Length: 217
Ligand code: DX5
Ligand code: ZN
Image (cartoon, rainbow, N blue to C red; front, top):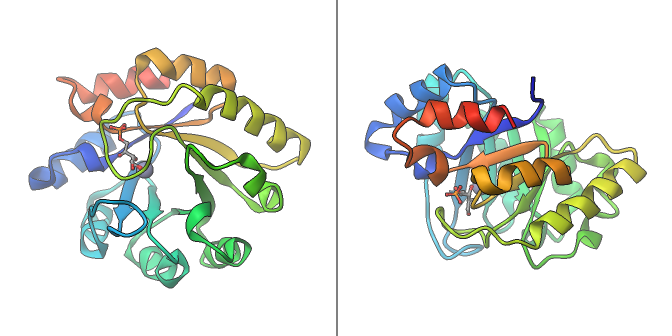
């Protein structure tokens, strides 16, 4: 039995049938529900807001993995916790006071995550790695679903895995962007613990079976 966690990203789901999509995830082997929040400033796109997160939470039977692609996310972490977030990830590039933000998230009782853009060096995580429970490695530039996977991610994941082991950190490595059956196995071999998948799941004719396939890697 695989220990890889799978988190379908609702950004790629049918928003007009969100309850049906959440029910599909509930009935699948997915572990978390990945929820992308974009502010049009940190990333050049807008996605969904707090009422949508609350609506997802009303139907979800799996933890909500909330990925905040917003500037100064510390202003909103409590609001997202109240809306139903179980995990909250903030971007290292958006947080001049990253350590404070991680403490804030933990104090709310959420799993604390940090997301890191493709161009950002892992050195940025050096001083907080022991405090983290989740590290979201962006394998595309954040802002849009359905983009092409960046190949450099494999090497970054290998290096990050080593950093985590050396620091005796319990952080899980999550991969976000362009995940599919071709790269999933290599990502897990490189050290990935959690696979986020948007288009690969929701554009499939049988999304539950795609989720099961990702689980069996
Ligand atoms: C990108 C988002 C991703 C996105 C992944 O900014 O953070 O979570 O939904 O979608 P796919 O799997 O389609 O690349
Ligand atoms: Zn995401």
